Length: 131
Image: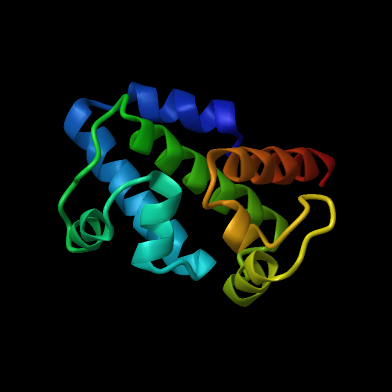
């Protein structure tokens, strides 16, 4: 699902459905990418306790918040990488931990900044269009 398709799908949901969908997608993405609570919290700019709460089933993000938008980007990164890697969790985690010359660093570290996250999503989604 491309970024624009994902946005259309999310926007079609009701408020509570949207909160739950993002929470579930974010937790799944973090697990499959091998990111711990602290790393996810750093990416979203929130306290790691919020991520722990989300893993326990509490929707802690609000539509329109910066953290919400960053969560959607992280899910998009996961979805693109998942498609490219053929749903291979080990390969996805390896990609996240390996120096990427095009991105100029290790994706796991780069996604800790908005700039790095956006660049990684753009890179993967452009690669996905070639597949």
